[in-house]
Image 1 (cartoon, one colour):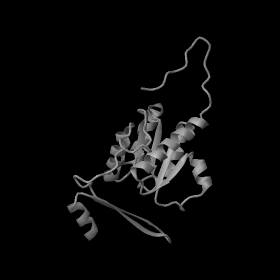
Image 2 (cartoon, helix red, strand yellow):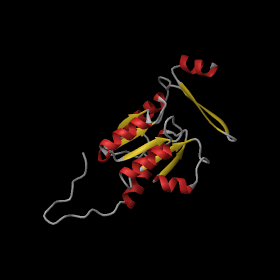
Image 3 (cartoon, one colour):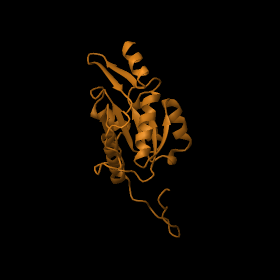
Image 4 (cartoon, helix red, strand yellow):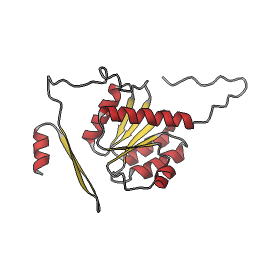
Length: 193
């Protein structure tokens, strides 16, 4: 509670992740310092950018969800955020074609990221999913394959690492997508705007 108070007083956030027989990870995020030089997406030539893709971000901790949304939108992605995986599942089930990709945390109350990914890819096969976790040893490669997850990234992620993981996930999904079959007399659908 002392660390939480210090972080709150400084406008930051703290979160903890614990795994049995693995220990606890404590992550503290402080706000940026005014006037400090920082590499921004616009000045970092290595920073991949999106092209208006619509991402579904599922993160149960509101401060982290907002940071993720801000980072993704600053590099050209539209981002719909849910802090409740059950609400995310319901929104996706109502309109699965509205989303180009999902980024989900692993450890969440109500439904973990593996189960959420499994349900999403059942509704829309080959749906690109990026799983972000601090628990890299909590599942097997078979678990990942069965859930339909394209990419896994270890928390915490820098802005650049997040951008690269999203780009990699979208690229892997594009390679795995079967070619569209055009029906005689119809045009191929145009790219989403």
